Length: 250
Ligand code: 1GP
Image 1: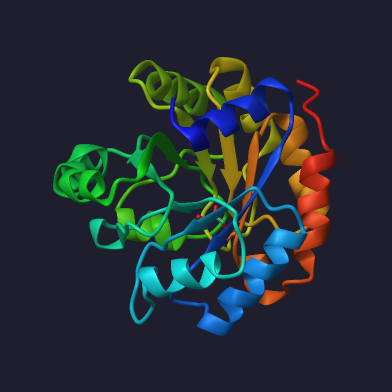
Image 2: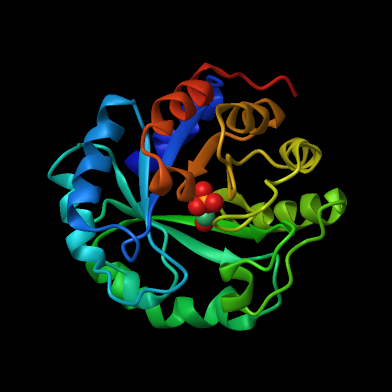
């Protein structure tokens, strides 16, 4: 089994929660990337995700190199398109947007990106990506042309995650969307957690240690934060600590 996924599974098996930072190459200049990587190392961040729904003037390669210069944390691509595949990362969350019914994001883009991913020699982690309604229209929902799962529909979320697991996906990512007004509901995380054995990632709109802790208690194995840290890097220590100190009660 591949090294990064093995670590994720090990964490889940011993109830250790992981904290991941999302870096948007478009919104972060090189100096900020260096600073973030340095802080991530000292705050015990487990993974750094790099990617964005849309990339205008940023460079994946420059961003990944800027991270690796200042820390030894595994870098995972979190790609918004095949253009974001880059061999300087350690692995890729190979996303299938299973909450949506856009065939391009279920298989079309994969057909295009597969040879690039293979040539890049990345560790591939097949991930069921599920958008959850979060109070506002998010970039990812608009760009993917898909409707998120309604907040109260825990059973739909659970069945979607189960189907993803049965299709062989190794992670389930519950996504409220970058900068979401409302985070993924705890009850939904709890229901999904009971329905699948694969690790669960939760992200979108998490701004406080309390929110990270609640998501972990509900059953998240990995917490992802991007936006809040772009605004204030000092939040990293508290978010990382809250994640690492929390255990699931479900
Ligand atoms: C977005 O889940 C990630 O894809 C992180 O969201 O930027 O809102 O923290 P935020």
